[in-house]
Length: 456
Ligand SMILES: Cc1cc2nc3c(=O)[nH]c(=O)nc-3n(C[C@H](O)[C@H](O)[C@H](O)COP(=O)(O)OP(=O)(O)OC[C@H]3O[C@@H](n4cnc5c(N)ncnc54)[C@H](O)[C@@H]3O)c2cc1C
Ligand SMILES: NC(=O)c1ccc[n+]([C@@H]2O[C@H](COP(=O)([O-])OP(=O)(O)OC[C@H]3O[C@@H](n4cnc5c(N)ncnc54)[C@H](OP(=O)(O)O)[C@@H]3O)[C@@H](O)[C@H]2O)c1
Image: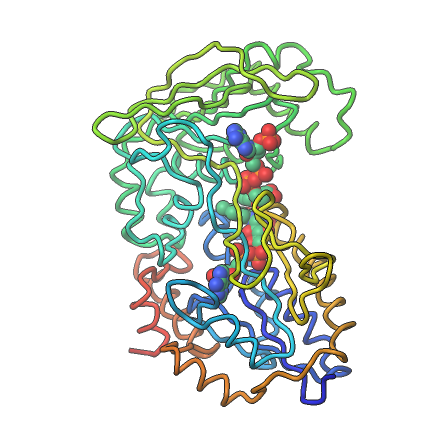
C-alpha cells in the first residue's frame, strides 16, 4: 500500500509522455503525486522535434501546449537519461526502485523491413533514418542518404511517405527557412534528385494520406506531380460507393483532377504517384542501390497480389515508409507482431495479469498510428488506470530524489534539467538568427547539445 508521497516516472518526453504528465499533474491536488519525465535525449518533444517535417512549422507550435507541465516547474525533466537500453544508461529495475509507477512512452523508432532481396544495399533505408537525419537527431548525424542519383523511390502511401518525398523534392533554398542543421542543408544543396517515385501497393481509394498533406505536394513551387494511374482515375475514378470517409473523397477528388489535367509544367523536379505497385527486388552495383524492380499488383477480395508484370525504376535510393515497430523494453512483455507492449487500457499485461506499477502510452501502447492529438486521449486513459491502482501500489525501496540522483551518478548518467534544455533551446533560436530567415537551427551533435545545455 502506498504510504510515501506517490512518485511516478514517465519515460519518454514525446507527445504521449507529456500528455500523460499533464494528466497526472491535473490529479496532484487530490493524489499528491510527484512526476518526473525522463528522456534519453537532452531535448524533449520526441517526434514533434525529430519526426514532424521541418517545413511543417505550424504543426510544431503544439510544443507550447506540451511544455505546460514544466512551466511552473511542477513536473521535473530529466534529459540525457537513457532507461533500459543495452548501450548504457539506467537499468529499468534500478529506476523502479525509485518510483511507485512507471509510464513507458518511448514510441516506435524501428523501421519495418520490406523483406525483399537487396534491402541491405547502401542506399536502401527506412524512413526513420532519413527523417531522423534531416531532423538533426543525434543518433543519425552521419546517416545522410545518397542523393547523387536523379531517381528515388519512396515505398508507402502514408503521410510519412509524403513528408520524405516532399522534403527531397524541395530545393535547399526552400528548406533553408526551416530548423534543419547546416550539414543537412549542405547535402540538400548538392542533391541530384529529380524524380521521386511514390510506390503505393493498393489503389487510389486506399491511400492513407491526409488531404492537407497530399495537397502540399501539388503546391510545390519547383516540382510537378505526375499521376501514373493506368486509367484507375479515368472519368469519375474508382467506385466510391463503399467509401464513407470524407478525407478519402477529398483525396480522390484531388487525384482525379491531377490525373485529368496535364500538370507537367516543366518544373525541375517531379513526384510520381504510382498505384498498384510493390517493390520486389532492389538491384545493386558495387554494394549500392542501382535500380528497383517493381511489380504490378491487383487487389482481389481486398487482398493485394502480384500479377508477375515487372518493370525497373532507375533509382539510387529506396526509402521504405511502411511503418515502425517499438524496441522491446527489457523486463516487460513484447508482442513482436504488432511491435507493442501488451496492455489493457495502458496497464501492462503478462499472461493475463497486470504487471504491477507498469503502464504504457502512445505508440508503444497502440502501435505507430495516429496524429499528435491522438496521444492525448490515449494518455488520459492510461493515467486513469494508474490512478485507480495508485492507492494499492507498493512503496518503492528508495523514494527520495537524492536516492535517484545517486543511482544516476552510479551509472555514469549526468541528467540535464528543464533550465538546461531552455539554454539549448535559446542557442538554437540564436543559430536561426545567424542563418537568417529560420526560427531556429537544430544543434544535432550530442556533445554540442550537452555543451549548450550546460552553457559552455
Ligand atoms: C516522420 C513522422 C512525422 C510525423 N508528423 C506528424 C505531423 O506532422 N502531425 C501529427 O499530428 N503527427 C505526426 N506524426 C505522428 C506523431 O509524431 C506521433 O503520433 C507521436 O509522436 C507519438 O508519440 P509518442 O510519445 O508515442 O512517441 P515519440 O514521439 O516517438 O516519443 C518517444 C520519446 O521517448 C524517448 N525514448 C525512447 N526510448 C527511450 C529510452 N530507452 N529511455 C528514455 N527515453 C526514451 C524518445 O527520445 C522520445 O522523446 C509523425 C510521425 C512520424 C513518424
Ligand atoms: N502531417 C501529418 O499529420 C503526419 C505526418 C506524418 C505522419 N503522420 C501520422 O503518423 C502515423 C504513421 O504514418 P506512416 O506514414 O508511417 O504510416 P501509415 O499511415 O500507416 O502508412 C503506412 C503505409 O505503408 C504501406 N505499407 C505497409 N507495408 C507495406 C509493404 N510491405 N509494401 C508496401 N507498402 C506497405 C501501407 O499500405 P496499406 O494501406 O496497403 O497497408 C500504408 O500506405 C500515421 O497515423 C500518420 O497519419 C501524420
